[in-house]
Image (cartoon, rainbow, N blue to C red; front, top):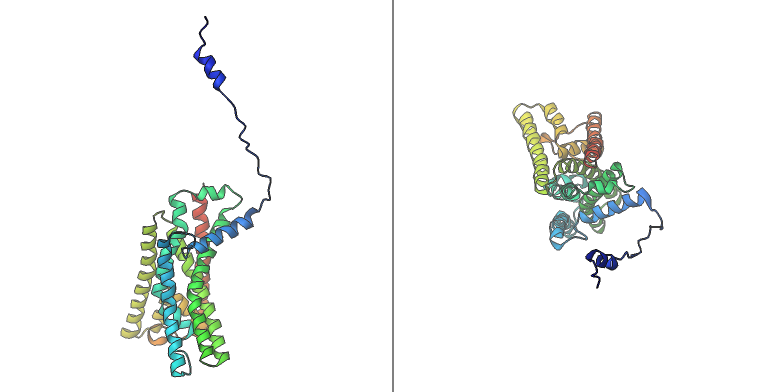
Amino acid sequence: MAVEQPAAREAEQTRIHNIGYRAYDGPRLGRAYARRSLYSQSLRGAYGLGRSVKSKVLPMLLFVVMCAPALIMVAVAVATKAKDLPVPYTRYAIIMQALIGLYVASQAPQSVSRDLRFKTVPLYFSRPIETADYVRAKFAALASAMFLLTSTPLLVLYVGALLAKLDFAHQTKGFAEGLVSVALLSLLFSGIGLVIAATTPRRGFGIAAVIAVLVISYGAVSTIQAIAVVHSGNSNTALWMGLFSPITLIDGVQTAFLGAVSSYPGGHGPSAAQGVVFLLVLLGLIAGSYGLLVRRYRKAGL
């Protein structure tokens, strides 16, 4: 009697199954849709939306703390029937700069560091999205999140001022100037934060580096300005030193063009002519940040 060979039995048990893989024949939404989706996802992530409860705590807490002084100022203005708000619109972000710096330090690495750490950047670029699309979406999302953080307190002040029946034209003008100021601040801080965060895949290092750059630059510039004005009376040195710190750069621009009162020692901010230099440096830093990010992600996407 013939014995069935093992190879013959295995051949009989072998089957090829048609599991129904089909090519996608739906609409191709393209780069614009991918860019919008990445922007939306990154903006939501900047406030922890769509992520764990733990991820929501810090951004939401900073948002509440950012708005709390504005609510207090409005309550005081209404209760005392004041003639004007205690703090000008253009001054609010300067006063709250520590919270703004902490926010960008915590959210810039969250936006870009994980993609570098988990090496998902090449996956983005395997689709229709390109390097510039990725950078624009990330830059715009963080700038939008920061503008929401910095403009909401101004809106609270403005609504409160109208409820307190303060002069409508004056308050509207101040509110508009404040919005321009925080828009420039949001773009500048977002660019700086993303450039620093994109240099390391480690989120903790990115947070520490962003805080160090913002704090050290402001501390050094403020110290030199105070020494120049108080001890040597050299207001020109104090003025031009404002170019070397993000917050003093914003202060100089809004003093020159938005009618703000300068926080420089002695209150000597740049004139309109000097403010042109401040504005060019600010715009150059924003454009330079974008360019550095594009070059960084071209290398990361290889």
